[in-house]
Image (cartoon, rainbow, N blue to C red; front, top):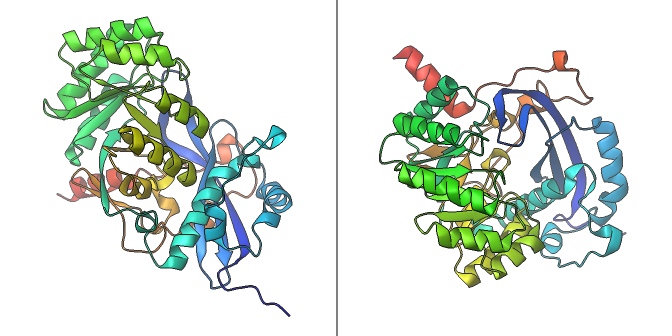
Length: 392
């Protein structure tokens, strides 16, 4: 009888979440009040559990039983008995109907869980396993703040500045340009004259309108580190023209593109910075090409900030985004952020473990009605600040 090797995948576990965020988040195009996500855990024969996260932006996820049935039918046959390191390095060329994400967004969670498990088996933090030599990355504060009132906006960024963040990103793209300018003025008053500032328009403008907005900001004294997604993601000519028209800032694009779209964006030299997120395999592929072309990589929002590992593994990563999203309670020990840096822990793999509260209190096996959802806690960074201020 042939026994399953200890390093092979033997089991999986799914935990479904559905709870109220601690604030409305969003941009010029969308807004969200709830968190709808899940944790995927893969177990190997030695007892390691690789952890990955996925989420649904728009709608609650199906019942966990339906998710498990789909995972078992479509993905598990290609995982059971396989070694994680053999799967993460596989190169495939999907064709036809196979050019799709796994059902229920399993694709991202599966990539993360496999990399976590492989790095644990190697006994290395994931950043080291990916070839990194750093254990911390610069981090900026992002508000996802488009729907805040002015008072909420000012209070939010004042608290973020008090935590020591050196740079801040706000959402712009309002139909009235004066409102965008007003928000920049409020931000500067909240964070001080020396802080770095970025803006994110989420494709709200045409190329010519973007040039006019950036000129307005510049004339008002707002020098920006970058403007993110100012125009449509596929308007490569417009992005190049905008970069030339605003030499005092940088264009950050690529967030909404898949890996092949980012490759085309890079090869067209149509962005000054390429924006990537949490799909580790795809982030590394994009990062390798960006390094060849000398184009910096910025890590956008990633679940539980797990992007710190790829940020520390790739060259020329100037920033990682931190948006104070209230899901830190889902893990036992979130990544440490202090003095403008986010740190990789000295633990194998991601260094994250699903919390007992996530498996119990915050687990939602079936979809909940709005009145049944719990209010998520404040972000841990803000919670600590609140507690220390209350006891001072």
